[in-house]
Each structure stands twice: as structure tokens, then as C-alpha cells.
Image (cartoon, rainbow, N blue to C red):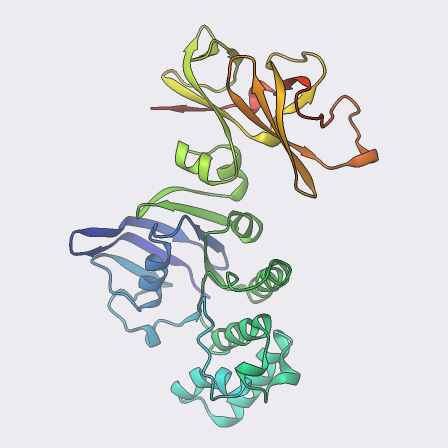
Length: 353
């Protein structure tokens, strides 16, 4: 295994900048997710690390070696692609063996490694089947086995779950995380799915327009986003525009919000929907009067839109606890019912221009 050091990594296509000055250290055995919208540069960065794309500038180190100029097959990386990229005319075992054959691994050692890795991904009994005879989840397991069988120093995954249905995505995601921890593999996981990144990563790097916006643990990025893009992209957030006045935040629509940790010059306050609690009466320093504007039933939780008396629309996410609701004062009302949307000052995040 090995750590990864990216220094000033840059990729430019003519006048178009795909990745701008990406620098990041990834520890040995760490799983880092590159997260961002389509076209933000996350896959381009991954392919530069893998050796499929040459960087315009910057350097890539894996362990103690500078691999910036090395071809892909000499970088000791294992890559899992979004579309599996299995050879249709080869069996499961033959697909997994391909990388070993290219590395001229002895036949006996090849068979041992193939058997071990197929057992690891629970595909040993299907080793003689062809890709067309496998489900999407099974094909993805073969792709993972093919990447792992070469015993890479670095494990790279490019949106590996995007072609699977929702239930299978959860299953394969958990398997990938379990394998990564068991093998201690330094791993980069590219995704545009926030839940995937939050659930699987030790740290996340959020990208936008080719630039890294923030790097940190899932908890840090979610609870304390560094800027408005991170706050708005990672989950949902309610925003209020305004300015700080004598320890309070005065909104453009005349509300005065109690906040903590708001720096001078803050012009926007955000609060997550799940931190907003609906009450029948005003409770706490931030209790905003309004009426329920809409209710969306989403199974595990219920989204409620509240139109405040001043005109702002606030989102609230209520747990669907049913009769087990621990706090009887919290409730999910019907549209048109007057409510107070209450939230704690410490749950407010301040942003400056």
C-alpha cells in the first residue's frame, strides 16, 4: 500500500481548464471520495492519477515514486470503471486473469490469486460464466476482482455504482468499503452521489469547475461547509440574506436571527432542514411564524415547506417516527396550518460575500 501526493495537478484542453491546481495528500489506507457535479473535473483527476491522461502541469507521487510520466501499467494501480469494461468473449476467470497475464505472472500463482479474489467478491461459483450471463451487480464484482487481483498499491473507482439499482448500490457500496478496510487499500472513489460519498469516505474532496472547494471529513463538510457551493451542493440548506447587527443577523425581510460563530462581514446565514423543528408555539431564540405550504411524504422522513409571515419559504425535514415520536411537541401538520419553525443559533452557518 502507499500514500498519494498530488501537487498542483492541472489539465487544460486548449482554452478550456478541466482541472486547476489540484493539491492533496492521501494517507496510506485512506479512502477519499472526489465528489461534485458532472463536468467538475473529478474523473479527469482520477484518470491523471491512473495514467490514462497526461497532466498539463503538476506532479503525482505514489509512495516514494514520482509516477507523473509513467504509463498506466507501471503505476501499481487497480481501476474499476463506471461501465465495467469486461471482455464479453472471456469468462469471469479469464477477465480476472487478464491483468496477471499482462504482468507475466506464473500460471500457478495466477490460479491461486484468481481463486482468492473471486472468493473475496463471492463470485467463485460463477468463474466459468460470461459477462452476458451475469447481472449488473455480478459484473461489477468481477470488475472489482480484476482490479484487486494485481495487488495494487492504489485502488481507483470511477462512479462504480451508477449503473446499479438503488438496493444493489447499497449492497455493493458496503462490500467495497468492507474490502477496502480489510485489505488496507489506499482508495479514491469518484461519485456525484452525496449519500455514497458521505457513507463511504474517510475524507471528501468537493470539486466545482475544476477546482477543489473543500477537503475534510464527511461530518466537517456537512456541518461546517467552507462556502456557499459546498453548503448548497452537499445536502439541502435554507438560506437567509442580510447582515450582522449587534450580535444578531438581520435578514432582508426584517427577521432577526440569533447566531453563533458569525464573522464580521457575513451576508448569508444557512440552516439545514433537519435542524428546523415545527412547533405550535414560539420556542427558543429563533422561532419564525408561518404556515405550512406543502408536505412531501418520503418514507423515512417527511419534507415540509413553511411559508414564513415575511414571505420566505423554509424547508423542514421531519423524521417519520410515527407513534414512537419521542418529542410529542414536534409534529407534521397539514397544509395551511399555522406553525413556528424553530432552530438553534448553533445550527446556523454564516457565509460572507
